[in-house]
Amino acid sequence: MLGGGKGFNTNRASSSMVSGSKISTLLLSMFATFASIYVSGRLWQESQNRVYLIKELDRITGQGQSAISVDDTLKIIACREQQKKLSALETELAAAKQEGFTSKLLTENDGAHAKKRHLVVIGIMTRFGNKNNRDAVRKAWMGTGAMLKKMENEKGIVARFVIGKSANPGDNLDRGIDNENRQSNDFIILDDLVEGTEDLPKKARLFFAYASDKWDAEFYAKVNDNIYVTIDALGTALAAHFDKPRAYIGCMKSGQVFSEPFDRSHKWYEPDWWKFGDKKSYFRHASGEMYVISRALAKFVSINRSILRTYAHDDVSAGSWFLGLNVLHVDEGKFCCSSWSSGAICSGV
Image 1: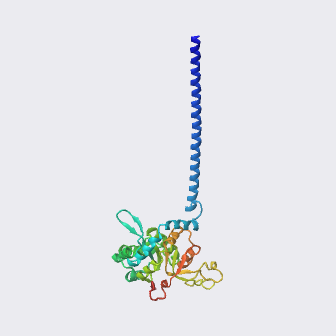
Image 2 (image 1 turned 90 degrees about the vertical axis):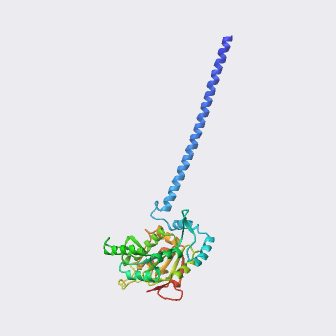
Image 3 (image 1 turned 90 degrees about the horizontal axis):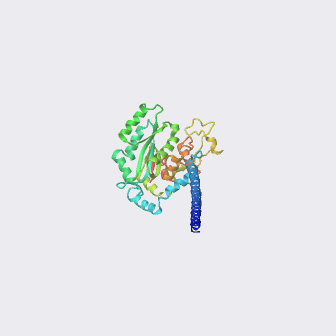
């Protein structure tokens, strides 16, 4: 009886251990299953998020379509412009009038040196045979060497001559500009542009793209090399427009479109005349002698440089780039360089 009792107890203990082991295994299996489901779910969610982000990135950068849309471009620009607060603008405006028009908004600080945003970058469109014009501009208002640097540091105004390359790379024309630039250090040489009168619209587009990538400024200006600029008057005029993030400033006009069949040899002939309707008048645009665009518009040109259409003339081309955007056209008589008046910003030679 005693032996039988011990056997019975032993069997019962063994059964309990086996039963407990099965329960533990079942619980571990259930836990592993739930863990697998949870991890799989998270991985799936992460993958969906990545797919969505990649699609959004492609949509914004243009990899998923032929070109970035105007709406997305303006959204990008608007986000970048949020850093310019109203209080900072008011402070800058007051300081600009008293301290040489330089914007006080700090854009870079490496711990030792703070870099100020320039007021304006001026691109002076020039050609290979126009050295006399360049020398006259340097003597009249642009300066050279220490004077040019002083204008940049104290007034926040950067000025550079803009020129392309010769059709025969490395020839006497290119070498002449290289030698002149070594002495003056005041050129932007556009390697992607073959210099020619018919390429002036492309030159203006490349200048705005290049300048906005190289210099951080409130405004960017295009000027011809036969125009004299009154720097102080320019600074005062631009300081009044700090609060306009998408400003297109100049002597606004709507000129005649010279079309076929009689005007092909005319200086202002427009090959795409048929696009401007039956009245043959251009839309409103700033005169090409001198005009200014704000930082946001220069960034717009930079982002879309490969798809912006050009016409026969650079001023019409620039006007077309901003026609469909929410841009403030500022018709400023002081930019009418052909008609000198008191307080004028520019005048022709």
